[in-house]
Image (spheres, helix red, strand yellow):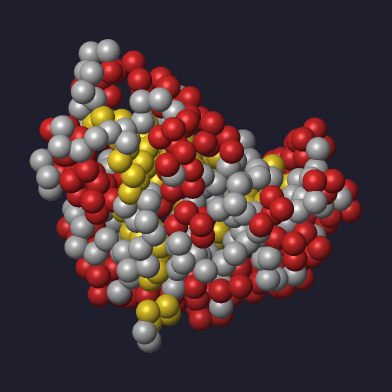
Length: 434
């Protein structure tokens, strides 16, 4: 089997889940689709661009049928859930679609198609409020971070977001099972764990809330770094910040998606906070956790956004000065409330693109200023892989910043001291410190 993954860290973890479950049925994962009897494309539905890429890639993968006419090609994940049976009708050569709650039966369906007991065109699209995939083997991909899903689905209903409709309502796993998965990751050689959830810090299971869970994971013997993503600003509490500050294995880094700096747009997005609320939360983070690195997500061109609203977003970016930011044009997602706004409120594409470019320019300038203040510091990095520049490797700091420096791929997984000597703004160059 060959699995190709698009999208977020949760999709990566879902691929590991699928690979583990299929391995228990005798499937062997290969790195080349040319060698596979089964090809699975695990997909994202957050933006239209991601879905267009997947459609194009599915077309490219059809060529492997020439050598393997019995090849089974399946589409899994959020895009499969969103489009459903239509995907089987719209794209020739798709033999199976499975949404995020359909992986438990995936192996049986694939077996049936391969041996002729089941027709092609299988669909696994039911959302199961009880599905946590407990007891499933996780076949982790190569890398230095173990992804541990603690929460599936989402109870928020942001008007731009498709996630609740393709992953269902929020479902939180049992704490003992999460802790055992973290311990298993250590046994497999991982020293960094990232806890995953759509709004991960809203986690609650019985008497356990997210700060308690984070503290418990942070104290698993053998872990040196613990991260989590993606939190919701409303659930960033003083207790959570105290855990980040006091537990040495919890990274002093927080992704804090703001989406817009305009109160009017935030209300239309149903984000349930104002720009003043967000700014106060960011200030609290920096007061409670000195040196914390903050990153964010921003959408421009949301329906009804005017120039004044966009200027409010620029003002917020200047006020917070994020270490990193992921910046996007609004992408309409069929089935989300935002697509039902009056047509005249949709921002023209050229206007939205201009705003995005202006936002990127501002962020890059601010990011460079923030990064230049770090030059000369010695930081600990976890080596992740080879850099594009010959003889260099890439490492990641506690603050989630990437550093390129001289090294060997034999050192992947090692923690090294590096002095920051140069920056592009987004990344750093470094020199090893003995």
